[in-house]
Image (tube, rainbow, N blue to C red; front, side, top):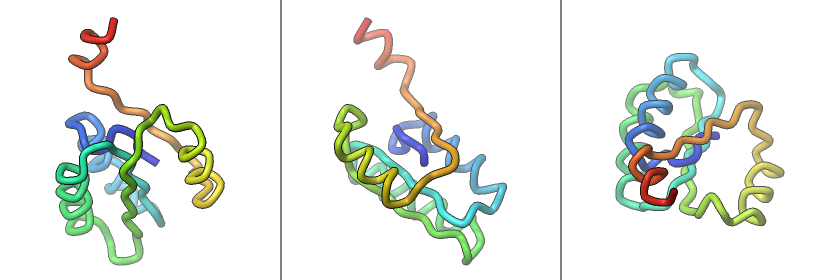
Length: 90
């Protein structure tokens, strides 16, 4: 599972993860257009046996996160956040 997948850092993590040919890549992001672009890009890069699934959600929606984790049971979770968003919030 990659959170922040619609942002630059999350997209790059997706590219790096694709190299390991996982059975499934879950992309969690908040921007539909960016997330669809990432999903399309990764679908072209990875093997046919790898499933790419994306979800539009806010990382602060705990209920939704637990639903996704319960359903897909990811073995690894990458939490990506943009540096400029961290600076603005601090």
